[in-house]
Image (tube, helix red, strand yellow):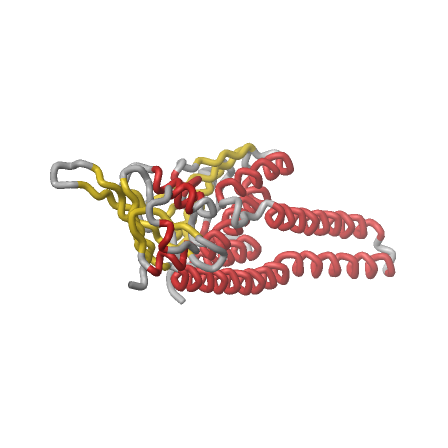
Amino acid sequence: MRDGMLVIDAQEHIADLNGAAQELLGVKSKVIGCEAAQVLPAHPGLLELIHKPAPAQDEIWLDDAHCYRIHISPLATRRGFGLGKLILFYDMSEEKEAQKQLQDHQRTVAMLQERELLARELHDGIGQALAAANLQVKSASELLARGETASVESCLLRLAEVTQEGKESVREYLLGVKTRFSAEQNLVSALRQYLKQYSQNCGIRTELLAPPELEERRLNFAVEAQLQPIIQEALTNVRKHAGASSARVIFAPYDRQVRVTIEDDGHGFDPGGTSEKQGFGLRSMRGRAEAVGGRLEVNSAPGKGTRVIVWMPWQKEGP
């Protein structure tokens, strides 16, 4: 029998165990009749399960390389008199290793996608700002050479605006990286931290609405890796273009999807007539959503504020 089997009596003494259980627990058949607590001190997680009222089920790592699904069933007579418990050990080590490799692969793919998107954003965002700054410097130089000093001032003012915008873009990107979620911190917690800093830096009141379910159940790593920059880009657009005093990020979980709404009370815009910079930001967000099987829509009108709605799957879809 490949799976381990352990039988304990009503007083939690070991009544029987097979060879597989002996090997995985590191004990001998001579332990029959001994108290489980004395025989298994190296496995406190297993002892905790044994103490629970049967039936019980959990996953336990018995060492660094071996994970087992533990299933505990009660043993009783036909009259219901308790005799003890049957404990079965199902080896999940290969399954766990495959899951780990899949997660590592997903993280690698997400990292490569992030690098590609970042390169495009730097080129089309900060790269354009630097190009505009260079153009203003050249224009100012030519105007000075012609003695048109009055026109130089407008070039310098425009140069100051462009460099300030570039500075804000870099600061927002670094803030996003600093507050990025991790294996220990989920997306909702990371966003709370980000919104607090965003509100202080931009003077825009922010609110995060998320049900308790999202504190316990995490989205797929690759999905979270794309969703956080989408939310941050939407909030960047609020700061740059909306003229808003407040913004909200609202999570609504469904069976197979999560809907995230980023809304503001700004002056809104005509989605069909967006500027080149706004259009790039929306394309970038839409591309991130579609990369993991999601979709994005924008609802806005002049004087009506803006709502960016993102539908994301719990698990990454597609290759």
